[in-house]
Image (cartoon, rainbow, N blue to C red; front, side, top):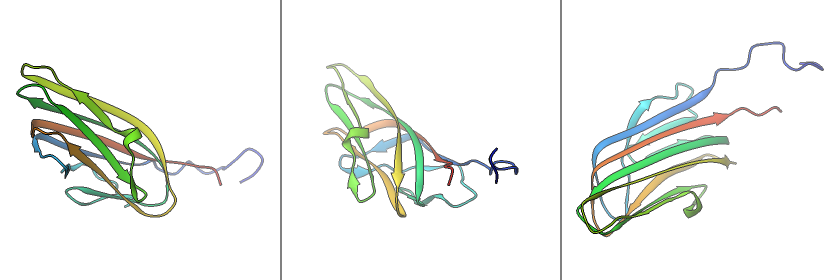
Length: 144
């Protein structure tokens, strides 16, 4: 430390990615996922197929979801963390009368003051078929 900042190299980045493809998403259910790239530091951990545990800090989160539908309907994806749902970072997509695909993506930054569980909930009156979910979570560095 000193007036020019740290003299040592910056610490390694902390990140993880999660995926699901050819999935069947069901109304009012948590969205299952698997590990794409594991966080070896254990700050971002898939604790079961629908729950990610985040240690305290600031995180950049990007996720996208797509599904196929047979006709007119909608899809709503809602993230949950820090003890509540966050519709402001959700996805909402309405489809037309013919077979169509619904797609949405969101990127946002959150503060996690204490360990929290992060989930995504799928809502639609029609099950989503051939669904995909991709998500990247990166813990941001902060000067202290």
